[in-house]
Amino acid sequence: MTKQYKTLGEFIIENQDSFKYSSGELSRLLNGLRLAAKVVNHEVNKAGLVDILGEAGDQNIQGENQQKLDVLANEKFIQTLKKREIVCGIASEEEDDFISINSFDNQHQNKYVVLIDPLDGSSNIDVNVSVGTIFSIYRRVTPVGTPVTIEDFLQPGVNQIAAGYIIYGTSTMLVYTTGDGVNGFTLNPALGTFYLSHPNMSFPENGNIYSVNEGNYVHFPQGVKDYIKYCQKEEDDRPYTSRYIGSLVSDFHRNMIKGGIYMYPKSSVASEGKLRLLYECNPMAFIAEQANGLASDGKNRIMEVKPTELHQRVPFFCGSRNMVEKAEEFMKNANA
Ligand code: AHM
Ligand code: MG
Image (cartoon, rainbow, N blue to C red; front, side, top):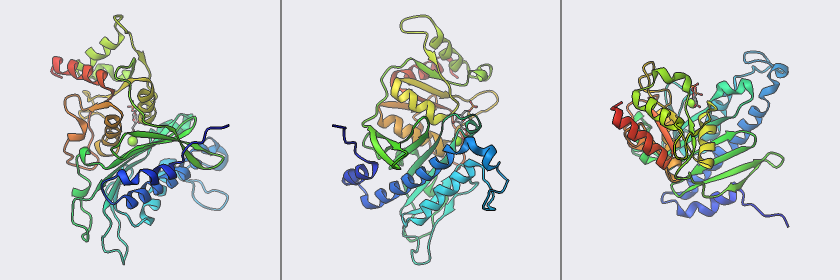
């Protein structure tokens, strides 16, 4: 007999009581993200047909303009979230400013803000390599009934009530947490249904994979250079394996399953690194911590960094607990 897997829809409903706030609303919000993920997945899967279907800027057969996939993903997520009367504001890596949402009869009653990186690693699309969507959900801090403000978005990661990612890989998966562990769901494309395939995901405490863009080595702080040399040294269980896809979601996902560390340090050419605190690092940090891993800026817990601007960048070290602690130790010792 074939094993019966739980669907994402069933899982969301079954687990909504464990959520301390208005659970029905969060369920509807997660269902909205699930729907948008399926639409974006459909588009990402067609990416290789771009020469046939047309480049961004061309018109397709219906006379509609073709869009770049990251722009399209941005629109799909925003459209889907706007339709549900749950979200009062959205901030996206693709938008300069946050979007305030309110309908005439709603009077700013919605309680949640969503921060999203609609298609992370999108430079990988042209070469048929995995990309992802990253999302993060907070309760607003300004009073219900008033328009959403920047304060609602500039919250530290510890305030997140849910976060997740979708990986458009050899199979498409949605992985998320509401603060009660991490669960992964794989899409059956024939049925359009996500099934619980990876319950209670967890980083091994130790790993043997390090993921960093070593082309930037000369620009890294001394502590990072020292840690990389440590990873490469022939001693104990080392040298470790180097794996870097250049797509945060994919590198993170592999490291969570196999054990490893992902690093995007600051450097002499990028004083805060590259990754965005609000759209990339905080959600991945929440997932990492819920999966027994760690996320740090090299010294401090990522989720305690107080954001000062929407598109703020931050150095990022994330993954298996012992590996992140070891990297921090090297940075502390080198005082860099
Ligand atoms: P993006 O938001 O412009 O796609 O950039 C984020 C991506 C991450 O997914 C990835 O880990 C990193 O940039 C790769 O950067 P680099 O090419 O500098 O190594
Ligand atoms: Mg990104």
